[in-house]
Image 1 (cartoon, one colour):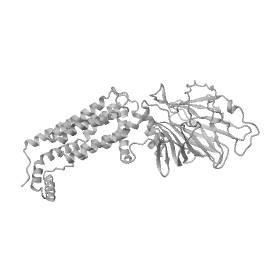
Image 2: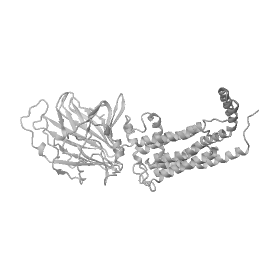
Image 3: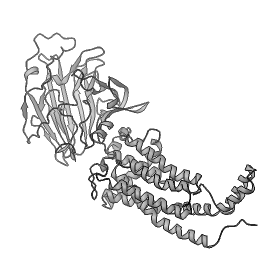
Length: 561
């Protein structure tokens, strides 16, 4: 069962405890090694079949295709900044490796790798006008400037890496310019091609991102391509469900392919000559028959042959994506579509609170969760006290309610009137206990999706837990959470005086068992938070128990004359 479905079922059961008991029971290519600074690597050309590039549009070459495009050695060049290390090929300026230096891969030694082994991204396919030929720029051996690559230190300015190809005789050319900044995952891409009316360029994002998480199934389940249409909003399509070519037509504000924590995004280039939209995103067949589909993003090419776009190649860090704009932070949305308008504000609040406690008070994320769990109970104390006293009062007036039932059993309308009058006389609201129990629910839901999707929690250890975003490997927390739920339910039954109710006894044993099973594979941070909330409620229940004893000492309630 998917984690979201199990969580939804767990919520349903918890709401059943909080509400129904109140109502019913009155209470791929091998990665190239990093190059030394100033070094350029020469290797043999790529292994895939050699395809002769098409003839330039409207031209008939006077010579055969030059041998250098088929036999020229591929040159790899490295770009390194404080955030990433990228390896580009001289064949079309494609990226063969993108390593994020600030994040460790859990499936191999070293940093996170975005490009699957043996694959490449950012290759361009130029469509020479409507119905024109398709030119795969990755088939052309470009020259590289600077030939030694680019290395940008922290605090330095942007630098540009240029790839250039010229067809013999000047009939065709391609120039690609990548501009990198030391403090941003955004790469600005500009290029020039022959001037052709209504030409377009499709940027290759490959078959998806490399797997970097220990729970490979989770990473593959989250793999998807997505686009933000200027009218229809964001549409996402899991790659696991794409078994034939699909497309999302533009105009789009952005197009992306993502995994659980990382994303490759193509955005319109808003520099000189850029446009404010993309023409679409397509999952279509790649060069290998029967192989995985490839994701390609269409961007316009100006009549003069120029084009520009931006590529965000990095982590799904909410603050960075918010700064880019166009709702890019929703590339990995929190919550189910139906509940997102409700959950989204709480996600923002929870993330702000988590970051504030972590960054300002220097608490580890595990202690942050404990503080939040206790803090919610403290803030909710007035409402919880009112709820528990309402349960006690409801049980106290039950003898009087039973008397009304016996007296007016044959007159349901009168019985209802007298019962409501009884509750009003003693200040009892049978439903008063529901609201305090429901208020923490949005926070619990928000935390679930925060731990499922938020990269700040990725790989964060706490005590014996190696990763707060992953299940407890020893299953200590799920059992502890179930035990704490049993204890709090037991105290509630004793305080409310419903210990003799057979239905409540059944719930006392069944609910902890069911929720323990459902929480068994949930993120350990979520179990830690929920168990902390349960334990933090125990002192409050003890205080309420003392108030109940004082009320009982005053004697049974009587209706005023």
